[in-house]
Image 1 (cartoon, rainbow, N blue to C red):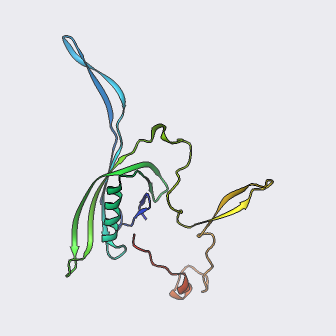
Image 2 (image 1 turned 90 degrees about the vertical axis):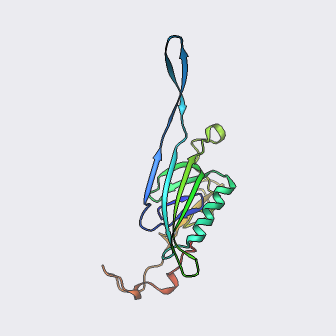
Image 3 (image 1 turned 180 degrees about the vertical axis):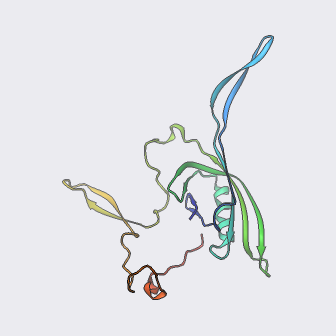
Length: 194
């Protein structure tokens, strides 16, 4: 996964073909008699991130990916943008979405879609506690919530169990090379494509 925008994962072929991040700084120009205007810094502009993504049918459903982005643009909601490395960039809204169909099947179904997505920072300001962790609107992937009592108190705290730490071991012999028999078929799952 390259990144996740709210609950929309960006499953892209390889990596984005292009990513452009733009920071700006706003200045007010004050007119001066018989001289050039003076500039005064008034604040930072909103950050924009432009991504060119390729969605291919070999690993995702291009039409479903596009529909998710169109729905995100239509609901005008700010979403957290987190890259696969864990880097949290803040909250953003979709301000532009351009689509180019790169490959189409004989019936017109999209095989490969190139999307140019422009995200603009949503300045939270004083609306939220800046020190609070982001609260996703969905259960994070690979976490199972469980209530457990805190040590030394009767209060309960929310704990998570990572699926990465809770996977059953393979049934085949250990070694540097894996064979198809090393992973039980019951452990293989297919992504929903969205």
